[in-house]
Length: 260
Ligand code: 48F
Image (cartoon, rainbow, N blue to C red; front, side, top):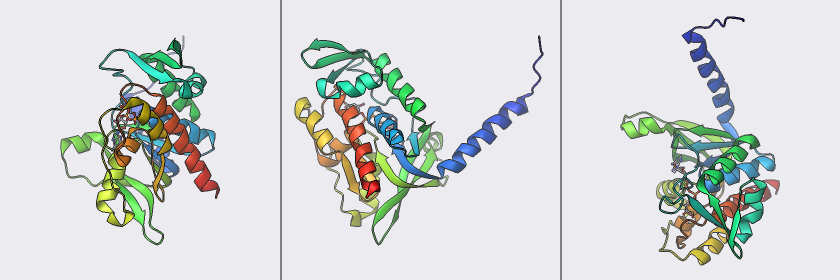
């Protein structure tokens, strides 16, 4: 048997060199998706299908956002008929319980969606928080994001972030619509008002969250629960079809905008 020979420095060099290669490419990409929850991952998959280079920045060290918690930690999620094709395309195991309502295990949903996102070729980076946007006037538009290691942010150390350029930013950060909120606060001329979500009305919210998904400013898009926050829509709880449909719709909108 051949004896392997390497030292610790080889491990370090591989990590630093290979990561640096990726980071150099990432500085200028087609689409930045913020958040690796259900909406962000779905958006990334369809954007890749349409041929865009995609980077997903996720604050935590794991995929999935609100998926893993299911409903109050019960390990099931509900999907409605309208999103069945997307869930099946990703290989999820759905069980029809009532007409048009399907149950899926959180682990199945999470694993299949994450696998599909990785396989799509989207670059997914954990432990990175987007804390601001880059803009240009005339015409007023968003042209990138500012990023920081989540660990640095949590530490409270004063460290300047790095900047990434892109053609479109998708805010898929969930209930707080963090990216759009910061843009609306710091660039008032964008004229974006973040309403904050309303109390629950699941059926209406599942429909409206998809209907309102799309561009909020030139170069800036909302998907998933961020849409509810921006437009003041009701919450829907642990039914996830709207998140998948919203992710697909934002990708279609970007595709449409960039073909013009
Ligand atoms: O919260 P999250 O799952 O948002 P979503 O994709 O789906 C919402 C559902 O999970 C559920 C629901 C649907 O029925 O009500 O809540 O709209 O995923 C958002 C992800 O974004 C990350 C966060 O850690 C989470 O994984 N995130 C949030 N802010 C930032 C961020 C940020 N500034 N930078 C990077 N990642």
